[in-house]
Length: 274
Length: 289
Image (cartoon, rainbow over all chains, first blue to last red; front, side, top):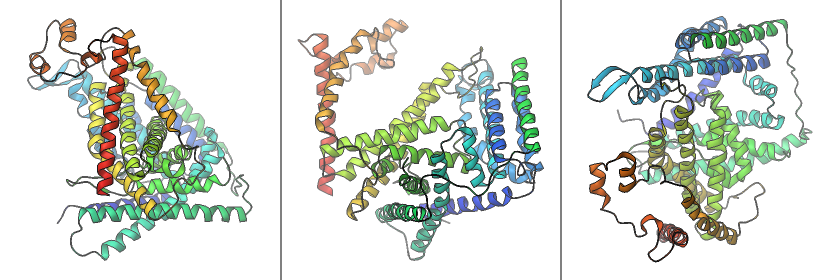
């Protein structure tokens, strides 16, 4: 079979993104531990945990923190296999490749000499492992937050981080229209592909790409005007009204205290260990 | 922010997100995607592009989990501030010099802007091992020093990401112009006066002798004599190659001139050569188009 061309690649990426969003929406509405928490409490505590993990230097602590999101995910009715696949495909592929040369390039005590002048150093391996573990820990926490929170709740709760209201509104609208554009890209590509016989000259492919990009651009301009008119006719004056309101409950407070204690304990333990 | 602007930025951000899903084939079989920062800045205006791209990168960090939450600030600085502003500024300058080649100007501007963004990212990464390392030299955060981070970031951007960005920006701008779609949908800054460009360039040229105040040579720009002084010997390969190229203005000075006027004259001649090269590239593209 021929290697995947840019047609198939684009269609695959777009379909994967759409599928991902559907799956995440399903997971976020399951009755689990994290799904039951107030999104604002979740955003603040997960961010606190991410920051404290980024401050850790001790390898044993970083390893211990790698298990926390997996445990939390199974308490939130997300199968550990699914969760590990989501995070585990990414970290070795990206951070792992980035970290690999650091084994050799970091000057220090040689641990294992491959050949004359090329050795894995102690400092290098420690730096590489710290990098990979730290990105695993922070990424899995972030993935956990995204998988257990509905998108509109997640974006709205950014307000607790002092994100301006207009910015949150733009985020929500962008998120909504991304799906519409992704679906039109998929239709355009599949429609064109099914009408194409034989190989395409490269110039022709580029012209098709440019015209479909520009079509989406023109459509976004046109739609922004229509959306604005629709907003105006529904009484939009620049203020955002929401129907649902968040309410903090006892379990949110309990969760926040536990997360705070965990973060503080980790930082203190790290200072003692290193 | 005016109410009118909210759907405009939102829809164009969704466009930028969608744009990054397109795989663009390059000659040789590689594919990649564009960032679209310069394109967005040309269409939406520089400030709209800064907000719009910040939205895109936040959604990407959350959506794919690949942007990194803690790196969001750095990503926004490189790709949502430096890149659209540099791309937009360069585009305006090039368009006022060559008003009949906007698509080529957009492509060149976007190429330089993405290289600049990569340069900033490389410097941010490369400074980390210098700033944060343990007592025994173990890097605590990013492990690569500048001498690795710079080529690792710049070479792929010069060869792959840059051409893709230029191709996409140039082709889409050409398409928009051909179909008479509006460029610059948000209020744009006043047209750039060329006078200010020349004044700025002149100022930069006049300021070049400031470098004379610093002692020593620019890092990495050592010649044979500097290395002799620093290392006590000249590497043999360098000694051999050192004589191959004699710069027309060696040490930025002109024969029969003092160091300060010599520097200024070198700057003016250097700028002239670069301007001539750009002019020739634009001329060549005009003839073919």
